[in-house]
Length: 135
Figure 1 (tube, rainbow, N blue to C red):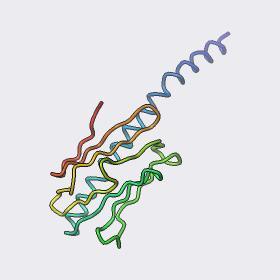
Figure 2 (figure 1 turned 90 degrees about the vertical axis):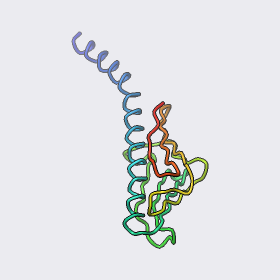
Figure 3 (figure 1 turned 45 degrees about the vertical axis):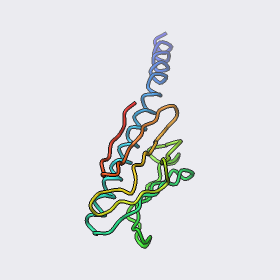
């Protein structure tokens, strides 16, 4: 009897914690995207050269490289086999943005990180402000 009650309670707990775990992983991925954008600003300022941030939606990859393409500063996969497990990583209105040494970006761009039914948006403004948007 005790084992049956414990089994029922464990089943309920697993059912309740599943969505919370998905939401936490989505928040973690959004924080990583925001940190990578700030890192790109720091690299541009340090090297005194523009950097390009590229998102490959099919690979769920975020790439930070020099404008010339000769140096890759960071490459982060966020797909199924990673700690983030994102189902979607996209950028809108374009796949890439250039960040200049003074922190200014070529355009305002919004990144979307989603896992299951949970998603977060991260916005990089032209002025260089990075914000995680909460639903």
